[in-house]
View (cartoon, rainbow, N blue to C red):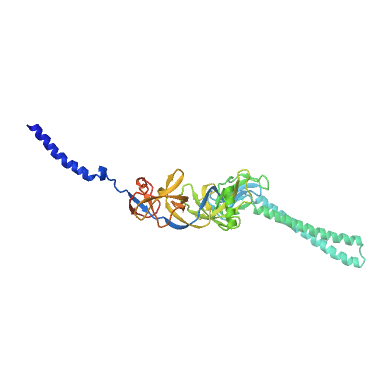
Length: 387
């Protein structure tokens, strides 16, 4: 009779198990859901200012193409290619000997002109005395006076020729007109270079690096906005005063360079619908160079009181933004908000939120409107990137 004994034993075991299951169930036999655990933080209240971003290229504050000013053979290159040079440093030397000979000849011509002028001056002085005694005619007296005037003009011409010759001799030593970083030597020793205003040989290039410019193009809509802000007194226009600017290179996180917008052009380019502007930034370490791509941001509003929250705490509801906040009973409340831009990793909230409210920043998927949650408080700071 073992079969019925086994059935009775199984029934006795099943009864306590069923009782345990009923104890774990809620009213009506339905299982009770655990209270969702969420992390909350209070918004950061701060004086804020919106920023508008533009793209641009770095350019040199000063750039000089070094050309030969006199013709001749290069006898010396006196700089290290790609190095820093100072204004006045010797860069190239052109063979000075032909120009030294021209200077000596000009000096001789000047001495000759001065001798002739002195002789003509003596004759003119004597002519005045002789004319008073009627020893010479009026015509001869006038001739000697005019001759003296002509010889003095010859002296001035010889002096000018000497100055020009000395200037050409000085141009055989080509010096840096500005301080900056120099390029390579386009002409090496022993080569013939041509001088003059047209067709002069390019020798090298110097660019100034500190400070450095970033040229940007602002769109017409932004320009009109800035001018309306200037009219209302919200923010001064860069046309009248310098305004702050911040810059970031493509390999940099955040806005590491602080500068100013120091120039805005006087007209919109009708082909592009933009206006040219320029920001200037310190470059003491000389690591930024002309041609680098950069992002620049400028104030897009005046200062105002705003709130900052994590961007990850913001939900999207058919194009509208919202957050979950907790009431006094720790129940979740759906709250539509109006957002602004990102600032230092946090999102600006323009309206819909108060500074003392608790915002759900972690556990959003488990939150339902009106459902009580179990919160834990943390600081409102940018969420750490996933590893």
